[in-house]
Length: 525
Image (tube, rainbow, N blue to C red; front, side):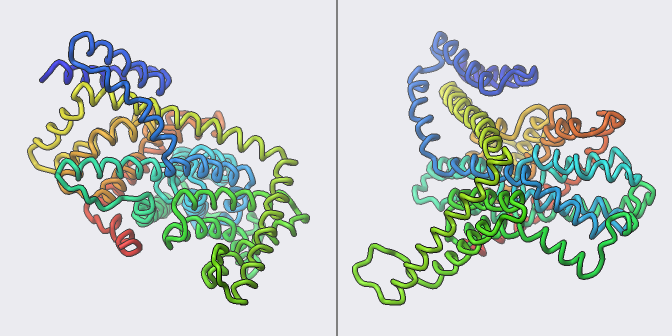
């Protein structure tokens, strides 16, 4: 190996050692890159020209419309968590499933899947479900370790069930890697890989994980009845029959409508994933205002109705206003659409007024800014790191190592999945996505691996890092809301079965690629 390749290996080891000590990720990546760049330059193994490309990389990040979806999805998730949508869902699902053995656990699984689809923020989901359902389940005699593991695991479903921040970031990286791999093979006409492809591909794997969680919960309730007892209906409010059905329907309307608006607009080709994220953020504001307005919410309801009418109009009538010739019917439809737009604006302003009075609007915006700033700082630091790594010859080293493995592409895929799983014990999904994926994805895609299938495999694998100790974020959130009587070791022990279930789900996706590729091909051809 050359001197530069040895330095690239040393740089990777140094980064992981510093990250293991808890040093900030962005500073670790940037500091290691600059140190080894200067060291390589002094040893004639690195050209400073690569560092000169930093401005171009940063500008490319700033002008990347796909990444705009990240703060929008973050805003949507935090707004839904602060507006008590999760609390209402958990209470209603508890009333529906509580009377059966293990029913409270099943309700947590269902709500976790719905919240994952409508928010995708792990911390918000875990803490919301932990604060609401954990005391009830412990009081009803549920096993503490299993309960904590269940809540932490279902809180991570938002990372695989679309729309998901992981899928947005991963889609951008896989798309770039696919172009790079195909051009290396001499193919300059490349079929694009979009975030929409990944969102469609993640639907069935996400639902598969929800099903595995529910089956595990029912198995435990059958095998050890005392660990997940049923709850008498009179202790759940005594609501039955039509009243219970109506309450369930009311609770499901908000997240399902938002889910259909976001995913439906993407899958139908009406909006790009970024535009769909904007729809989700606006919808979260409307639903949040609807929850906090109480009896003074008629303006918000008018805004929601007007938005639905606009959707119907756009599918039935050509509303373009720049045309020289229009029919009378089109003029009437355009005028009506303008009135609906005014109604939507008034409804949103009224929702924002109610949210501001509750102190939610500013706090949600501030939290979104903090999370987004952290994410994009890591993105820019990863760009500098990848430039130096490439300048030292590290990407060629990784490419030759993976392509020369005995066993072909399956051995390479297995090794990459194993490395990503092990890195999940110490690194965050953003760090793994921006450090590891650009290095390993091009050689794998060059071997003929389907990019959508590979991305979904990586997404399912990355989900496990939220549960793997000692740095799994879901464990920290669970520890924050769990009572002192529950030890940290109980939380760690409780998540082990769910990590295994996620690996089982990963095995299903590996054995049956159609789980990830069938729906994108059906929708996008």
